[in-house]
Length: 435
Image (cartoon, rainbow, N blue to C red; front, side):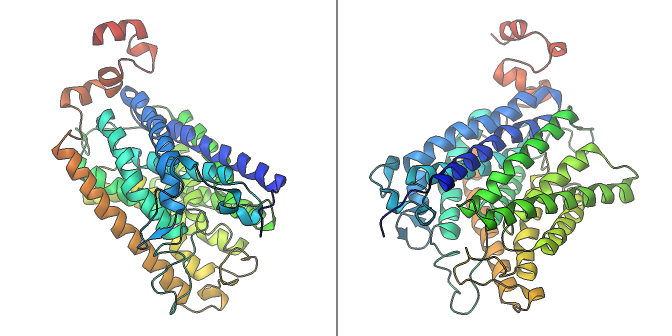
């Protein structure tokens, strides 16, 4: 059937893509506020660097390698749409909803960017900026693109699922495995290989600007509506369900996180509220259109409590995940992905390949739960091993960490030749001192 442009859906996806693109600068504020004042600019520059590097990769070969003709179940043909050339709108990922090829490719670009940027929080305060840019390029190519193809592009964990004859197809509506589990396990591996910050566990490393953190969380919440509702590829009732579930689960997770803090520590903090928001957003992402309101409430509740508890694991196990990428994104992604197996419902699952996706609590048996667990584990193993190889190669060649004196002095001044605040020295004097 010939492609028919739907101007309403096209406008919706352009707007959704713009919202998701906003999430990367929002993440820069969220992460930037959480680090110490001497490295805030470096932290924010890591998000902006990812935006630049990954965007170029995506339009040159990333989209094609993700959604091109399947090669062995692991990757698409990078030559199919090289440079986003040679494609017709009939070949659009969203052709069925009347959205042109380039608009669909642009929407998916924003997912690739934010996924890479998320990892940076795990290695705040110590990673070389040049190494980060190289890592971003390699990880996007070797890890993100194959993972997205395997889950969303017809590869082994999605359309070509190895156990499709015996188990239901996996559900990842907007990125539980592709984005959050993927980035979360990568952050853990990179943090372990890079090593702990000087003073970790013995010095206070408090957020330097909590209003930045809350502003970033608010902007992330706003942008996330493009992330989740936009993943329906159309302005319809399913997109509305995704929007509503995103709001409900996030609100519950916020309250669950600060409630956990209050019971455990005696205080409900602004950092906890902002972190609870992100935990809820992460957890509902794979399930946004797969569960009803009660399912969204349950997912938000579990995510808020478990993620609040999980951020303390780094002190128990001794890994330095600076900004809790593991506790929020890995744990939150696992919560949302696995709980689909309990709470998914076919009430509005017109987007689902088989037209039905009932979880254990909705009469569907344990099949969907088993599928979700298998896919989550597969994503962790693939991303973890691939990230380990990349990190070890970079450590052995160009090095991962800045010198100790630069880490102590502050990466902003040592690496970027500027500081965030006037009390740390004027911009002009800083540049002179660096020269």
